[in-house]
Length: 249
Image 1 (cartoon, rainbow, N blue to C red):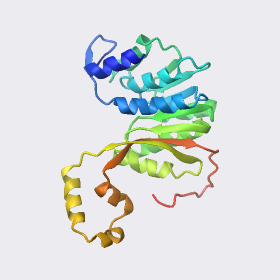
Image 2 (cartoon, rainbow, N blue to C red):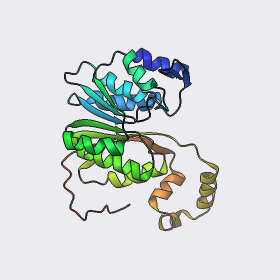
Image 3 (cartoon, rainbow, N blue to C red):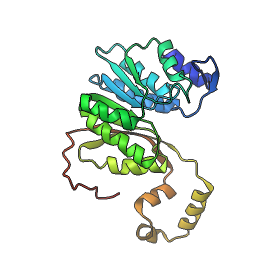
């Protein structure tokens, strides 16, 4: 399995069901793959995993690599566009790697997740969310992931650098049942707009920044690193009251 992962990363392309070669894009990079793999490997109790979004299958390969030889291991994939947009490349890579402990559900997450919850609530050990990245879809995926996870399980979310995903996680991460387990950060490539904002904010007296800039904005302007992936651990059941609302959102 590792040879297949390394081959994809080295060539930066995958082969689809049609036999066509596709340039690698919209995929996790090696550092992100290892981050995900380490979370699964670090906890032997993780056996039942769920992934929202498969694409070319690199995240699936990393998860399944960490799961191999664990009795009862099963990886579930939700990807309605695997055969269309992705030419079946993700499933093909898993089959080529000899993975026989996965199932693929060819449905939208907003359809599949509620049905899974009816049958499998509290029975998953890890859920990886890397689907449609709008604010509402990310919130929906994470809401159902929280219901599907057992206490002690992990919610891992990719692409926190994107504003809608980051905003959704600012909300979800404040659920009382979660604690931050691990984060993956990387250097931020500043846009022209961000460089201009830094220049303008840098002209402010240091003692004035705290009162004039929201802490989140100040971090974006002056922080050297930004979170790319976030892993939360569900430490208890979700027992929020009907009128719960986070202190900051």
